[in-house]
Length: 148
Image 1 (tube, rainbow, N blue to C red):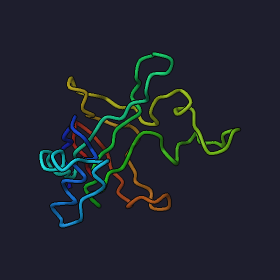
Image 2: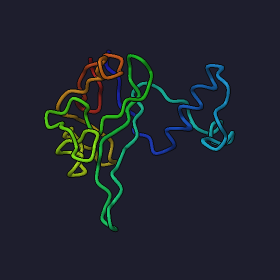
Image 3: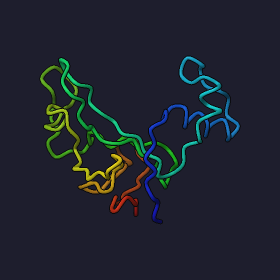
């Protein structure tokens, strides 16, 4: 199925909360999302996406880390910033895992953006890996449309 990307600048958390409330789930902790924000934010839908940035270090500029995108398969948010299966993944000397992209404060994907900052293309393909806790969706983002 082809799902167009809808670039959003509102709160991802409020959009998830709006979706959950519409499904009859109990409200989350109001410290996370106020009732007003949940009522005034459109619920999240497949194809909705939010930009993720690495905060500037030492007053430097923010850099693109990637995007959080609502999956067409499972309806949950997948973060495509640093890939768990990135080819440059390795153990970090202080513990945990890192990769070349994380250390350079960039994304494991190459993104082509539209004039409004919305993602039009991503390379390589986008994959929510089951063995790493994902839903198994695997597809491409081309011309602002996600296809499996």
